[in-house]
Amino acid sequence: MKRNLIAIATFALCLFALLLVVKPDSATPAALAATRRVRSCGTVHPSGKQADEIQNSYLKFKAARNAALSATGSITIPVYFHVINRGKGIQNGDVPDRMIRAQIKVLNEAYDGTTGGAATAFRFELAGITRTTNEAWYNMGFGSNDERAAKSALHQGGADALNFYTANLGGNLLGWATFPWSYHAKPELDGVVCLFSSLPGGTAVPYDEGDTGTHEVGHWLGLYHTFQGGCSTNNDYIDDTPAEFVPAFDCPVGRDTCTRYPGLDPITNFMDYTDDSCMFQFTADQAFRADGMFAQYRQ
Ligand SMILES: [Zn+2]
Image (cartoon, rainbow, N blue to C red):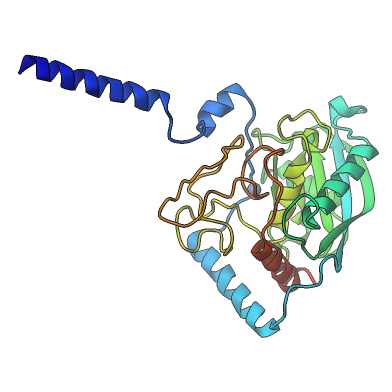
């Protein structure tokens, strides 16, 4: 009897040790964040009820429009870059023109399908660059007075123009964006904000290939995170991105956090949280939604 108890206790202990060693998932955000910066996007997703209202309005619009996807590459978005720095030189956030041109190229190759995803209707063209030295704006936090002041002073163009701000960003954020349905109420706050060192060739390794920009522009076009809604049927309101329970970090190939739903986690999607080298695609339904959202709110 005693021998049996010892055997059971030993087995239980081994099982416990095994559970400690073999984590069911990739490292947790908190554990990763202790060792390095992890992707963190400040974009505020609408609540369940508001998301439903936005979705119903979108579906109604789509039905009335009764149109297929706009032709690939048929919509060119003018991009106004606003470099907010605390002085001269890249170390002070004054990103050179060549990094801005490289960011535009990254956007075009992501949205035209060159990197391996669906080709969307969108192309991006540099329309202008402003450079502002302002230490408070440089360290702007999400939703801060500094953000409002900077954007109110610098914003250019209409609903169809992309204002792309670079700064140092508080709160360890890589970026944030406004959704298309927010434009009408606060046009001067519209746009995307990215950590200056996330531009291609920057120092925010492994987020140094410009995909923070690609991700934030995805929000600006009405796309949610792939893990929005967790394991649910609606999930991110996109039909061809499998449901995902929580964000994926690093590049956890084969991960499946919603086993009761079909498909592995969409870790290679631009709207997840993986490393830049891991994400390379939008899906056909994301291209479709972005096109519809643009027509509904930005044209
Ligand atoms: Zn995001």
